[in-house]
Length: 245
Image 1 (cartoon, rainbow, N blue to C red):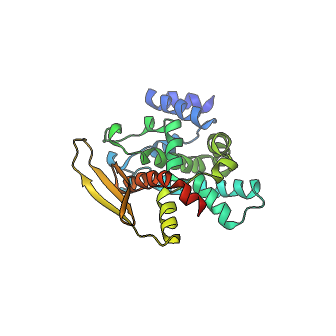
Image 2 (spheres, rainbow, N blue to C red):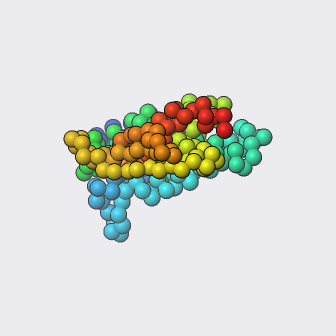
Image 3 (tube, helix red, strand yellow):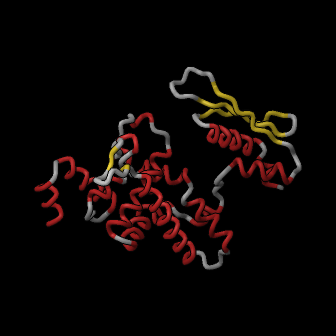
């Protein structure tokens, strides 16, 4: 109980609440609470350390991304002994895709800990995956590789990783559609334009043309998302042709 008593004796109730919240997510006690606090510090908070260096989660996010890739690679290497380099790389990409990391961050409700001057309702989906990676980086600095591996096994691999399902999971519908068009020697074009709707956030609209026909349309808060959604709709419209090629 030494760690717990120190928190309540020398820190605020807020630190105590943060400690218990993080401990519940990790499944073990954090040692250095300051590292974990930094993992949820958004750059808009505009905080600096004693040396005047900016403090936010981005450096921990970089470290967590590397640890995530290493540990997932090790798992796949052991789990799929017949997989070649290309297969293992593709499977790792599916597990650590931005979409999947965002889902993980949401499931763990990590945004509740984020310190920011920006209202949380204004954040895009990527904030969830960003702080998840930063949390992984914090675990590595605080408790080392073994605890990092334990956390990822319990929070990512065990509940979410199913090799058979992942083999059929599409990472990018846009890449799939472009590859099919190139293979079939068909011309394609993503016509992107700013949407002037009444939404509070700026939207972009996309028309995806294949040959002379508009195959799909979509709108989203970024060009990338709009293109991916239009591609997904195009894929399902042309699925029989694409799957047979």
